[in-house]
Amino acid sequence: MATVRLLHLSSAFRRHGGPSSPPLPRRLFRLYNRVVRSFSTSMSPPSKAVVYDEQGAPDAVCSVRELPALPIKDEDVCVRMLAVPINPSDINRIEGVYPVRPAVPAVGGYEGVGEVHSVGSAVKELRPGDWVIPSPPFSGTWQTFVVKEQNVWHKIDKRTPMEYAATITVNPLTALRMLEDIVDLKSGDSVVQNGATSIVGQCVIQLARLRGIQSINIIRDRPGSDEVKEKLKKLGANEVFTENQLAVKSVKHFLADIPEPALGFNCVGGNAASLVLKFLKQGGTMVTYGGMSKKPITVSTGSFIFKDLSLRGFWLQKWMGAEKAKESREMIDYLLSLTRSGELKYDMELTPFDQFPTALDKALGKLGSQPKQVIKF
Ligand SMILES: NC(=O)c1ccc[n+]([C@@H]2O[C@H](COP(=O)([O-])OP(=O)(O)OC[C@H]3O[C@@H](n4cnc5c(N)ncnc54)[C@H](OP(=O)(O)O)[C@@H]3O)[C@@H](O)[C@H]2O)c1
Image (cartoon, rainbow, N blue to C red):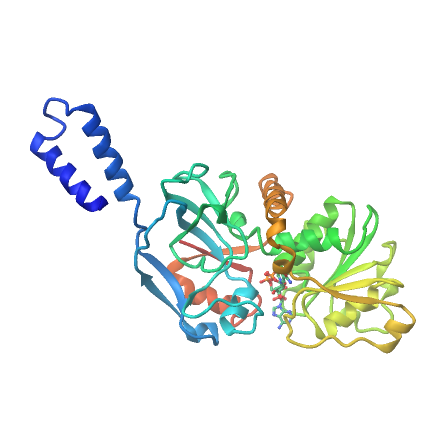
Protein backbone atom coordinates (compact mmCIF):
# COMPACT_ATOMS: atom_id res chain seq x y z
CA MET A 1 0.00 0.00 0.00
CA ALA A 2 2.78 2.42 1.02
CA THR A 3 4.65 1.43 -2.16
CA VAL A 4 1.65 2.17 -4.37
CA ARG A 5 1.11 5.52 -2.67
CA LEU A 6 4.79 6.39 -2.98
CA LEU A 7 4.87 5.59 -6.71
CA HIS A 8 1.73 7.61 -7.26
CA LEU A 9 3.13 10.60 -5.40
CA SER A 10 6.56 10.37 -6.96
CA SER A 11 5.11 10.38 -10.48
CA ALA A 12 3.06 13.47 -9.51
CA PHE A 13 6.29 15.00 -8.25
CA ARG A 14 8.16 14.09 -11.44
CA ARG A 15 5.30 15.28 -13.69
CA HIS A 16 5.55 18.51 -11.83
CA GLY A 17 9.20 18.87 -12.90
CA GLY A 18 10.94 18.41 -9.54
CA PRO A 19 12.44 20.97 -7.20
CA SER A 20 13.51 23.44 -9.95
CA SER A 21 9.88 24.04 -11.05
CA PRO A 22 7.55 26.42 -9.26
CA PRO A 23 6.73 25.11 -5.74
CA LEU A 24 4.40 22.17 -5.44
CA PRO A 25 1.31 22.72 -3.37
CA ARG A 26 2.84 22.56 0.16
CA ARG A 27 0.48 19.84 1.38
CA LEU A 28 1.40 17.54 -1.48
CA PHE A 29 5.11 18.15 -0.89
CA ARG A 30 4.80 17.36 2.87
CA LEU A 31 2.79 14.24 2.14
CA TYR A 32 5.38 13.11 -0.41
CA ASN A 33 8.20 13.63 2.10
CA ARG A 34 6.33 11.78 4.85
CA VAL A 35 5.63 8.81 2.62
CA VAL A 36 9.21 8.72 1.31
CA ARG A 37 10.52 8.82 4.90
CA SER A 38 8.21 6.11 6.15
CA PHE A 39 8.91 3.95 3.10
CA SER A 40 12.67 4.31 3.38
CA THR A 41 12.72 3.33 7.08
CA SER A 42 10.34 0.40 6.72
CA MET A 43 13.01 -2.19 5.99
CA SER A 44 16.38 -2.75 7.66
CA PRO A 45 19.49 -3.21 5.54
CA PRO A 46 20.51 -6.85 5.10
CA SER A 47 22.61 -8.06 8.04
CA LYS A 48 25.94 -9.88 8.01
CA ALA A 49 25.82 -12.33 10.90
CA VAL A 50 27.66 -15.11 12.72
CA VAL A 51 25.12 -17.93 12.46
CA TYR A 52 25.07 -21.50 13.76
CA ASP A 53 22.59 -24.11 12.48
CA GLU A 54 23.29 -26.64 15.18
CA GLN A 55 24.92 -26.70 18.60
CA GLY A 56 28.51 -27.86 18.75
CA ALA A 57 32.11 -26.67 18.79
CA PRO A 58 31.85 -22.94 17.89
CA ASP A 59 34.76 -23.04 15.43
CA ALA A 60 33.02 -25.89 13.59
CA VAL A 61 29.38 -24.74 13.58
CA CYS A 62 29.65 -20.95 13.18
CA SER A 63 29.77 -19.24 9.80
CA VAL A 64 29.35 -15.67 8.58
CA ARG A 65 26.28 -15.21 6.40
CA GLU A 66 24.10 -12.47 4.99
CA LEU A 67 20.58 -12.37 6.43
CA PRO A 68 17.73 -10.71 4.54
CA ALA A 69 16.38 -7.23 5.35
CA LEU A 70 13.69 -7.15 8.06
CA PRO A 71 10.57 -5.00 8.25
CA ILE A 72 10.77 -2.23 10.84
CA LYS A 73 7.41 -2.13 12.61
CA ASP A 74 6.00 0.90 14.45
CA GLU A 75 7.64 0.00 17.81
CA ASP A 76 10.90 -1.28 16.30
CA VAL A 77 14.36 0.17 16.31
CA CYS A 78 16.94 -0.88 13.76
CA VAL A 79 20.44 -0.75 15.24
CA ARG A 80 23.74 -0.90 13.42
CA MET A 81 25.98 -2.87 15.75
CA LEU A 82 29.33 -1.25 16.49
CA ALA A 83 31.10 -3.76 18.74
CA VAL A 84 30.35 -7.08 20.47
CA PRO A 85 32.42 -9.29 22.80
CA ILE A 86 32.94 -13.04 22.74
CA ASN A 87 32.17 -14.17 26.28
CA PRO A 88 32.54 -17.68 27.74
CA SER A 89 28.74 -17.88 28.04
CA ASP A 90 28.36 -17.12 24.30
CA ILE A 91 30.61 -20.11 23.64
CA ASN A 92 28.61 -22.27 26.06
CA ARG A 93 25.34 -21.31 24.35
CA ILE A 94 26.72 -22.36 20.96
CA GLU A 95 28.10 -25.58 22.48
CA GLY A 96 24.63 -26.29 23.85
CA VAL A 97 25.81 -26.58 27.46
CA TYR A 98 24.23 -23.38 28.77
CA PRO A 99 20.90 -23.73 30.61
CA VAL A 100 19.24 -21.13 28.37
CA ARG A 101 20.01 -21.26 24.68
CA PRO A 102 18.31 -19.89 21.58
CA ALA A 103 16.61 -22.21 19.14
CA VAL A 104 18.79 -22.97 16.09
CA PRO A 105 19.50 -21.64 13.56
CA ALA A 106 20.63 -18.75 15.70
CA VAL A 107 22.88 -15.72 15.60
CA GLY A 108 25.57 -15.71 18.30
CA GLY A 109 26.19 -13.05 20.93
CA TYR A 110 24.39 -11.76 24.00
CA GLU A 111 25.67 -8.23 24.54
CA GLY A 112 27.17 -5.37 22.54
CA VAL A 113 26.71 -1.75 21.59
CA GLY A 114 25.15 -0.25 18.49
CA GLU A 115 24.03 2.98 16.88
CA VAL A 116 20.39 3.58 16.03
CA HIS A 117 20.04 3.39 12.26
CA SER A 118 16.29 3.99 11.89
CA VAL A 119 13.15 3.84 14.00
CA GLY A 120 9.51 2.82 13.59
CA SER A 121 6.79 5.46 13.52
CA ALA A 122 5.78 5.01 17.20
CA VAL A 123 9.32 5.37 18.59
CA LYS A 124 9.77 8.70 20.38
CA GLU A 125 12.68 8.21 22.83
CA LEU A 126 15.33 7.03 20.38
CA ARG A 127 16.55 8.51 17.13
CA PRO A 128 19.17 7.76 14.50
CA GLY A 129 22.68 8.29 15.83
CA ASP A 130 21.87 7.36 19.47
CA TRP A 131 24.04 4.68 21.07
CA VAL A 132 22.17 1.79 22.62
CA ILE A 133 22.84 -1.53 24.32
CA PRO A 134 20.35 -4.41 24.44
CA SER A 135 18.81 -5.22 27.80
CA PRO A 136 19.09 -8.88 28.83
CA PRO A 137 17.86 -11.47 28.26
CA PHE A 138 18.84 -10.96 24.65
CA SER A 139 20.54 -12.96 21.97
CA GLY A 140 21.82 -12.39 18.47
CA THR A 141 24.19 -9.41 18.74
CA TRP A 142 26.89 -10.86 16.47
CA GLN A 143 25.57 -9.19 13.33
CA THR A 144 25.73 -5.85 11.59
CA PHE A 145 22.03 -4.88 11.97
CA VAL A 146 19.56 -5.87 14.68
CA VAL A 147 15.85 -4.99 14.66
CA LYS A 148 14.04 -5.18 18.03
CA GLU A 149 11.27 -3.36 19.87
CA GLN A 150 12.21 -0.04 21.42
CA ASN A 151 11.86 -1.28 25.03
CA VAL A 152 14.78 -3.67 24.48
CA TRP A 153 17.22 -0.83 23.87
CA HIS A 154 18.91 1.18 26.59
CA LYS A 155 20.26 4.54 25.42
CA ILE A 156 23.72 5.27 26.76
CA ASP A 157 26.13 8.17 26.90
CA LYS A 158 27.99 8.35 23.58
CA ARG A 159 31.13 9.57 25.30
CA THR A 160 31.67 6.02 26.60
CA PRO A 161 34.54 4.18 24.90
CA MET A 162 32.89 1.78 22.47
CA GLU A 163 34.57 -1.39 23.73
CA TYR A 164 33.42 -0.69 27.30
CA ALA A 165 29.86 -0.01 26.17
CA ALA A 166 29.99 -3.35 24.34
CA THR A 167 31.08 -5.30 27.41
CA ILE A 168 29.46 -3.56 30.37
CA THR A 169 26.42 -5.73 30.94
CA VAL A 170 27.53 -9.29 31.52
CA ASN A 171 30.80 -9.14 33.44
CA PRO A 172 31.05 -5.78 35.27
CA LEU A 173 27.45 -6.11 36.45
CA THR A 174 28.15 -9.61 37.77
CA ALA A 175 31.14 -8.28 39.74
CA LEU A 176 29.06 -5.44 41.18
CA ARG A 177 26.12 -7.63 42.25
CA MET A 178 28.34 -10.29 43.80
CA LEU A 179 30.12 -7.64 45.87
CA GLU A 180 26.89 -6.01 47.01
CA ASP A 181 24.40 -8.83 47.47
CA ILE A 182 25.98 -11.79 49.22
CA VAL A 183 27.76 -10.58 52.35
CA ASP A 184 27.46 -7.19 54.02
CA LEU A 185 31.00 -5.93 53.40
CA LYS A 186 32.43 -2.83 55.04
CA SER A 187 35.40 -0.67 54.21
CA GLY A 188 38.53 -2.46 55.46
CA ASP A 189 37.08 -5.95 54.85
CA SER A 190 38.57 -8.26 52.25
CA VAL A 191 37.49 -10.68 49.52
CA VAL A 192 39.37 -13.54 47.87
CA GLN A 193 38.90 -14.69 44.27
CA ASN A 194 40.33 -16.99 41.64
CA GLY A 195 40.24 -16.24 37.90
CA ALA A 196 41.41 -12.74 38.80
CA THR A 197 42.54 -12.03 35.21
CA SER A 198 38.99 -12.45 33.86
CA ILE A 199 36.93 -9.33 33.19
CA VAL A 200 34.77 -10.18 36.21
CA GLY A 201 37.94 -10.60 38.27
CA GLN A 202 39.43 -7.28 37.13
CA CYS A 203 36.12 -5.55 37.93
CA VAL A 204 35.94 -7.19 41.38
CA ILE A 205 39.38 -5.75 42.18
CA GLN A 206 38.46 -2.21 41.14
CA LEU A 207 34.90 -2.10 42.46
CA ALA A 208 36.13 -3.53 45.78
CA ARG A 209 38.87 -0.92 45.99
CA LEU A 210 36.35 1.88 45.34
CA ARG A 211 34.49 0.60 48.43
CA GLY A 212 37.65 0.36 50.53
CA ILE A 213 37.58 -3.44 50.35
CA GLN A 214 40.86 -5.30 49.93
CA SER A 215 41.27 -8.15 47.45
CA ILE A 216 43.33 -11.34 47.52
CA ASN A 217 43.68 -12.69 44.00
CA ILE A 218 44.59 -16.08 42.60
CA ILE A 219 45.77 -16.57 39.00
CA ARG A 220 46.87 -19.54 36.93
CA ASP A 221 50.54 -20.44 36.65
CA ARG A 222 51.36 -19.41 33.11
CA PRO A 223 54.09 -17.64 31.15
CA GLY A 224 54.20 -13.97 32.08
CA SER A 225 52.55 -14.41 35.47
CA ASP A 226 54.86 -11.81 37.08
CA GLU A 227 53.69 -9.16 34.59
CA VAL A 228 50.09 -10.23 35.19
CA LYS A 229 50.57 -9.76 38.94
CA GLU A 230 51.93 -6.25 38.38
CA LYS A 231 49.03 -5.39 36.10
CA LEU A 232 46.46 -6.53 38.63
CA LYS A 233 48.22 -4.65 41.41
CA LYS A 234 48.07 -1.50 39.30
CA LEU A 235 44.31 -2.01 39.11
CA GLY A 236 44.22 -2.09 42.93
CA ALA A 237 44.76 -5.75 43.85
CA ASN A 238 46.26 -6.01 47.34
CA GLU A 239 47.75 -9.47 46.86
CA VAL A 240 48.10 -11.69 43.81
CA PHE A 241 49.26 -15.33 44.03
CA THR A 242 49.66 -18.09 41.50
CA GLU A 243 48.07 -21.43 42.35
CA ASN A 244 51.49 -23.05 42.78
CA GLN A 245 52.54 -20.43 45.33
CA LEU A 246 49.59 -21.45 47.45
CA ALA A 247 50.38 -25.18 47.37
CA VAL A 248 51.03 -25.20 51.12
CA LYS A 249 49.02 -26.51 54.07
CA SER A 250 48.01 -23.14 55.49
CA VAL A 251 47.73 -19.90 53.53
CA LYS A 252 47.08 -17.65 56.52
CA HIS A 253 50.61 -16.23 56.61
CA PHE A 254 50.10 -14.88 53.07
CA LEU A 255 47.50 -12.48 54.40
CA ALA A 256 50.02 -10.29 56.31
CA ASP A 257 47.87 -7.43 57.64
CA ILE A 258 44.80 -8.14 55.46
CA PRO A 259 41.85 -9.42 57.52
CA GLU A 260 40.62 -12.93 56.71
CA PRO A 261 37.97 -12.68 53.99
CA ALA A 262 34.34 -13.55 54.69
CA LEU A 263 33.55 -13.73 50.98
CA GLY A 264 35.23 -15.58 48.12
CA PHE A 265 34.48 -15.78 44.38
CA ASN A 266 35.14 -18.84 42.26
CA CYS A 267 34.93 -18.93 38.45
CA VAL A 268 37.45 -21.75 37.91
CA GLY A 269 36.60 -24.83 40.04
CA GLY A 270 39.00 -27.68 40.87
CA ASN A 271 42.11 -26.77 42.86
CA ALA A 272 41.55 -23.01 42.34
CA ALA A 273 38.24 -23.29 44.22
CA SER A 274 39.90 -25.18 47.10
CA LEU A 275 42.40 -22.31 47.38
CA VAL A 276 39.60 -19.77 47.75
CA LEU A 277 38.10 -21.93 50.51
CA LYS A 278 41.47 -22.09 52.29
CA PHE A 279 41.55 -18.30 52.66
CA LEU A 280 38.00 -17.91 53.97
CA LYS A 281 37.41 -17.13 57.62
CA GLN A 282 35.17 -19.07 59.97
CA GLY A 283 31.59 -18.94 58.63
CA GLY A 284 32.73 -17.49 55.29
CA THR A 285 30.93 -17.91 51.97
CA MET A 286 32.25 -18.92 48.56
CA VAL A 287 30.17 -17.89 45.57
CA THR A 288 30.63 -19.90 42.39
CA TYR A 289 29.75 -18.05 39.19
CA GLY A 290 31.80 -19.88 36.54
CA GLY A 291 33.61 -23.14 35.85
CA MET A 292 36.48 -22.29 33.51
CA SER A 293 38.58 -25.39 34.38
CA LYS A 294 35.53 -27.65 33.87
CA LYS A 295 36.60 -29.39 37.10
CA PRO A 296 34.24 -29.95 40.02
CA ILE A 297 34.58 -28.29 43.41
CA THR A 298 35.83 -30.53 46.19
CA VAL A 299 35.24 -29.42 49.75
CA SER A 300 36.87 -31.09 52.73
CA THR A 301 34.56 -32.36 55.44
CA GLY A 302 36.44 -30.19 57.95
CA SER A 303 35.61 -27.04 55.97
CA PHE A 304 31.96 -27.65 56.74
CA ILE A 305 32.26 -28.99 60.29
CA PHE A 306 35.03 -26.85 61.78
CA LYS A 307 34.86 -23.73 59.59
CA ASP A 308 31.13 -23.76 58.86
CA LEU A 309 31.75 -22.51 55.34
CA SER A 310 28.83 -21.86 53.00
CA LEU A 311 28.75 -22.46 49.27
CA ARG A 312 26.50 -20.45 47.03
CA GLY A 313 26.04 -19.70 43.33
CA PHE A 314 25.33 -16.58 41.34
CA TRP A 315 23.75 -16.29 37.90
CA LEU A 316 23.21 -12.82 36.49
CA GLN A 317 20.44 -13.91 34.15
CA LYS A 318 18.39 -15.17 37.09
CA TRP A 319 19.07 -12.01 39.06
CA MET A 320 17.97 -9.80 36.15
CA GLY A 321 14.29 -10.64 36.14
CA ALA A 322 11.83 -8.23 34.54
CA GLU A 323 11.37 -6.47 37.89
CA LYS A 324 15.07 -5.56 37.89
CA ALA A 325 14.98 -3.89 34.44
CA LYS A 326 15.10 -0.30 35.75
CA GLU A 327 17.62 -1.11 38.49
CA SER A 328 19.86 -2.88 35.97
CA ARG A 329 19.87 0.12 33.64
CA GLU A 330 20.81 2.44 36.50
CA MET A 331 23.67 0.16 37.52
CA ILE A 332 24.87 -0.07 33.93
CA ASP A 333 24.88 3.73 33.71
CA TYR A 334 26.88 3.83 36.96
CA LEU A 335 29.42 1.32 35.64
CA LEU A 336 29.69 3.16 32.31
CA SER A 337 30.38 6.40 34.20
CA LEU A 338 33.26 4.61 35.96
CA THR A 339 34.71 3.57 32.60
CA ARG A 340 34.51 7.17 31.37
CA SER A 341 36.26 8.48 34.48
CA GLY A 342 38.95 5.79 34.17
CA GLU A 343 38.03 4.20 37.53
CA LEU A 344 37.02 0.95 35.84
CA LYS A 345 39.14 -0.58 33.10
CA TYR A 346 40.00 -4.03 31.85
CA ASP A 347 42.03 -5.71 29.15
CA MET A 348 40.40 -6.07 25.73
CA GLU A 349 41.52 -6.63 22.18
CA LEU A 350 39.48 -5.10 19.36
CA THR A 351 39.35 -7.29 16.25
CA PRO A 352 37.72 -6.36 12.92
CA PHE A 353 34.65 -8.43 11.99
CA ASP A 354 36.38 -9.95 8.96
CA GLN A 355 38.85 -11.57 11.37
CA PHE A 356 36.11 -13.18 13.47
CA PRO A 357 37.59 -16.73 13.16
CA THR A 358 40.88 -15.58 14.72
CA ALA A 359 39.07 -13.79 17.54
CA LEU A 360 37.00 -16.92 18.14
CA ASP A 361 40.13 -19.09 18.31
CA LYS A 362 41.58 -16.69 20.89
CA ALA A 363 38.37 -16.71 22.91
CA LEU A 364 38.38 -20.52 22.80
CA GLY A 365 41.86 -20.51 24.39
CA LYS A 366 43.49 -22.10 21.34
CA LEU A 367 46.21 -19.44 21.33
CA GLY A 368 46.92 -19.42 25.08
CA SER A 369 45.84 -16.67 27.49
CA GLN A 370 44.42 -13.72 25.60
CA PRO A 371 42.61 -10.51 26.46
CA LYS A 372 38.83 -10.39 26.01
CA GLN A 373 38.04 -10.44 22.28
CA VAL A 374 35.77 -7.61 21.13
CA ILE A 375 34.60 -7.64 17.51
CA LYS A 376 34.42 -4.25 15.83
CA PHE A 377 32.04 -3.99 12.88
N1 LIG B 1 27.22 -16.57 36.62
C1 LIG B 1 27.10 -15.46 35.91
O1 LIG B 1 26.07 -14.80 35.89
C2 LIG B 1 28.28 -15.02 35.11
C3 LIG B 1 28.32 -13.74 34.55
C4 LIG B 1 29.47 -13.35 33.87
C5 LIG B 1 30.52 -14.23 33.71
N2 LIG B 1 30.40 -15.48 34.23
C6 LIG B 1 31.50 -16.45 34.14
O2 LIG B 1 32.64 -15.84 34.69
C7 LIG B 1 33.79 -16.42 34.13
C8 LIG B 1 34.70 -15.31 33.65
O3 LIG B 1 34.08 -14.64 32.55
P1 LIG B 1 34.84 -13.43 31.83
O4 LIG B 1 34.09 -13.09 30.61
O5 LIG B 1 35.08 -12.38 32.84
O6 LIG B 1 36.20 -14.15 31.48
P2 LIG B 1 37.30 -13.69 30.42
O7 LIG B 1 37.56 -12.25 30.56
O8 LIG B 1 36.90 -14.21 29.10
O9 LIG B 1 38.58 -14.48 30.95
C9 LIG B 1 38.63 -15.87 31.00
C10 LIG B 1 39.23 -16.27 32.33
O10 LIG B 1 39.20 -17.67 32.49
C11 LIG B 1 40.52 -18.14 32.77
N3 LIG B 1 40.64 -19.44 32.15
C12 LIG B 1 40.46 -19.75 30.87
N4 LIG B 1 40.60 -21.08 30.69
C13 LIG B 1 40.88 -21.61 31.90
C14 LIG B 1 41.15 -22.93 32.36
N5 LIG B 1 41.12 -23.98 31.55
N6 LIG B 1 41.41 -23.10 33.67
C15 LIG B 1 41.43 -22.05 34.51
N7 LIG B 1 41.17 -20.78 34.13
C16 LIG B 1 40.92 -20.58 32.84
C17 LIG B 1 41.45 -17.11 32.16
O11 LIG B 1 42.70 -17.18 32.80
P3 LIG B 1 44.04 -16.68 32.07
O12 LIG B 1 44.01 -15.17 32.08
O13 LIG B 1 45.10 -17.23 32.91
O14 LIG B 1 44.01 -17.22 30.68
C18 LIG B 1 40.67 -15.83 32.49
O15 LIG B 1 40.86 -15.48 33.85
C19 LIG B 1 33.32 -17.35 33.03
O16 LIG B 1 33.25 -18.65 33.56
C20 LIG B 1 31.92 -16.85 32.75
O17 LIG B 1 31.08 -17.83 32.20
C21 LIG B 1 29.32 -15.88 34.92
